[in-house]
Image (cartoon, rainbow, N blue to C red):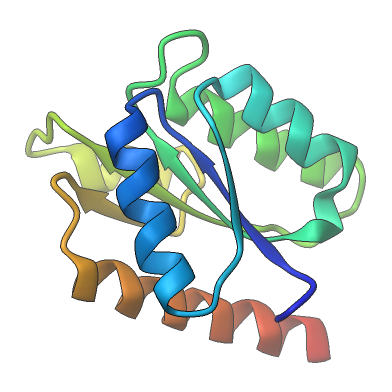
Length: 135
């Protein structure tokens, strides 16, 4: 996993910092941006670099749902194995989890982020990604 990174897309700098800190304490490198367009561009420029994307659903230029759908379309068009995507939100409603699934995300977490929940989900998704790459 040393060569793989987590891409974080969140306009809230304090959320970026909190996620980066949890990941770094677990030995996971990450890169953050505050724009859905930037997440999409960064991912598309080197899709094999990323083990996971943690994406706020409230990013203003392209929301997280649209960004996830665009990533899935790019992967399908280029025959690329799907990266795992976790959606986050400050404003969960009763449909948040289902909306993330419909957008092609692999999981969802409400803010403020619970450190243990984040690490459990990251660990599970890293294991899934690693197993898929062995097939």
